[in-house]
Length: 425
Image 1: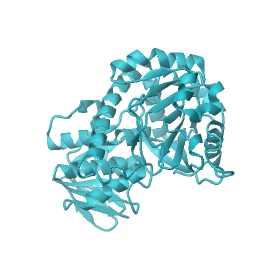
Image 2: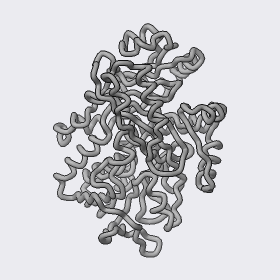
Image 3: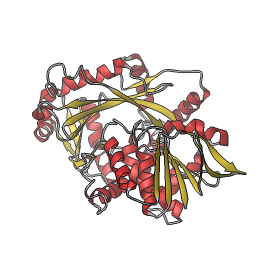
């Protein structure tokens, strides 16, 4: 089949990789000059397969007032007059209950574990063997550190439930946590305990996209058109038959829209309205001056909702979820929160004023209200979606690409495709 993919972030690039393996004629269209230059560029770096619970949970609504009043809160909300924001928020509120959250978590875990299997096959496979280490991929495990005794006790109570879903985790007290990750010694007195998951991974998402692009360039059935702006989708009756760009038209048997939050205006003229809203996240990338002060294991500060991932010779620090309209502009106050927390937790990781001199980054993570991405055929013939992964794009990309490829080829999907039906858009 001739397939056009709109978007070359991590979701678009993994989709291109899987479809090229199936022998399809693939054209990737991306407005930036290279792959992974937007939301995939400097994300948290954690491939966190066992931690995919949706933002919409039973305890979230009670925390929102405090978050809104705290300038350093992990979540910010700025209301607008846009009806789409309020529709998204109402659906989000409806999903904030235990039954919905648990069902969503089970579905996302199946997709995450499938994605983990495919990522492992990629880094160990013959085609990618030379590129497998080209994005600082490492399996170092993850520590979710709790500063509050009640929160830690609650996490411990979930261990049996998590184990029933396939997660391999263990609870560590304060001393065991610092023994496993000595770089946390500076906050030893603040640690109530931690949950350790040894199977979690890290990697540089942008470099992963570049690795895929490099591999795809060697395939005769793939064309990657960077610096190409898509202006619309072509139709014949109700059938989507191609893509219109500022330069030309690209005919296709199937069009896959994987352009993140920018996909919403592209799809609107066809009456396809995915309920997506951008969750703006921030990161800083810290050159490691003192390796003893940087964690080897990925760390999530549960109270502050900040993640730390050692990627090569740098420490990626990321967090926040701002429900705001607008592009990926930098809120200096939010960036300074990351700097202050990094200094408090891993003081001395950077030389002198190195932290203050860093260039922060922000990305718009396209999220559905319930946390389930839209993967598969839409209601329009010829139009397929791979959207709405929120903060889990890197983690779920391989699995989503595999799920879509199976459906497009008419194969029985490896996991339940109905859980992520794109017809919901």
